Amino acid sequence: MFFLSDVLWAQKAGNPEEEYEDAFWPRTRVSGEWRTGLSVAVADGATESSFAGVWARQLVHAYCRGILNSTNLRDSLLKKQQAWARFVERKPLPWYAEEKVRKGAFSTILGFSMRDGDGKKSSGSWKAFAVGDSCLVQIRGETLLTSFPLSNATEFTNNPFLLGSKSEANVGIDSQTKTAAGDWQSGDKFYLMTDALAAWFFREVENNRTPWRALTDLDTDELPFRPWLNDLRDTHQMRNDDVTLYRVDID
Amino acid sequence: MVYTAEISRNNPSCFLFLIDQSGSMGDNFPGEIAKKKADGVADAINKLLQNLVIRCAKEEGVRDYFHVGVIGYGTSIGPGFGGSLAGKELAAISEIANSPARIEERTKKVDDGAGGLVDQKVKFPIWFEPTFSGGTPMCQALNNAKGVLQRWLAQHPNSFPPAVIHITDGESTDGDPSQAMSDLKTLSSNDGSVLLFNLHISSNPSAQSTAFPDSSANLPDQYSKLLFDGASVLTPFMRSVAGEHNFSLSDGARCFVLNADLVLVIQALDIGTRPSNLR
Image 1 (cartoon, each protein chain N blue to C red):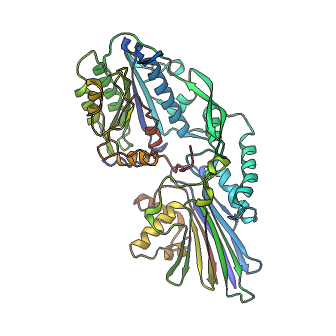
Image 2: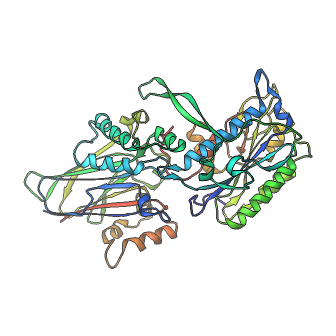
Image 3: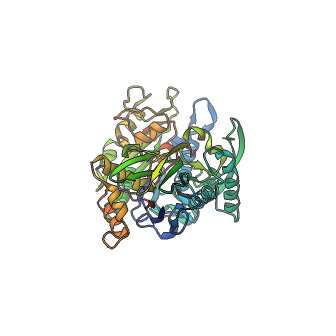
């Protein structure tokens, strides 16, 4: 079994690249023969909060290193929260930035891990966990097999519950943490998406279209990523927001 | 006319505050000897500006999502900022963030995440001190605001429509302001008409704190009713945000509050994802 994972991302139109506040891990394209398993993650730092990009990056990195998961979320978050606090306290801030830091940063997290089956190498299991509205879909052939944690466009709002960098913001987090698990087969495709792209994806599905075909073809000569994205934004088919697409293809 | 235009640094919106600084604002609130209506006005505008700045703040500074003006009216009518902003009709929100007259440190109770409350020191910037003198030339002030916004809209035709936040006791001394309020609301961008919010500071003993009513039936006097009638209707998005804050508002809910907090209006501006657990 051979797999390929890669990522496409873009900051909100009109913003400089350094203001991109989504995050993903691993940072580079990974491909090869299956060995010990694969973990990838995306996160979406909330515009409303400060130092949200830093927080989102800490979360995806922690997930892929195995120190953040749904079973020890509170404890494993604590160390990340302390790391975030150390980062933001490095220098004095003006009154408004201080107030914003006091409220903390917020981000979604979507972590996805795959394991090989018992030596079969043509099938296996996967599991995922999510807080917020970053979404995972599983495509098998021409079928949308799994949507997680959301599955239709109307579920997206501009005030989701997110992981806070201050523990007091995470009251009720247990009920907001979603998990899923399933099987994979050779030929399956998994897409991890932040909210603007995911909302577009589900809207397309609801209109009896097959948006996964475009996601598969993206970043080829026939369908370059940035012009495709700009067109969707310009025609108001996709909300203007940071966009991240993590693709995992299994041969 | 849908109030859906993106608010961004490339396409900013505008807030214009109209504050009543007339002599009648020196009256005390009933039962509160130490608190004058002018104190209520200063509290309201300082809190609104603080919230607006914080909503636009990011780690690198304050993003200029808004242009902000303040018109004070009482003995005279004109731009209300002091210090380095004195005389400016409108200023970028980042300039306002960096120019408070002073910054107080206050203590407030916050949730400790474990079911208790702890004291936390917060910085509270002061731009405006309580002030009151002269008549209440409300009609002139509203006409002045119309001129400011006409000029701004000519330069920002595709913006999210400007919001006017009018803080007053309603006791106009230069005539009935109904027509002037109506004229202000006829101004529009391609995305909708100017939104007029009236915050009524009342010392009427019958005044009950009220927020975003859809009828004037229970308002205490003609000043309240006049300000209710002049106020815009809340946009659907603002109503939905109000719903998230446990308000149950009808389609006819007005941009009007009586002796109540208007900070919800700042929370109800769509400038990006606002986590439900951000307080």
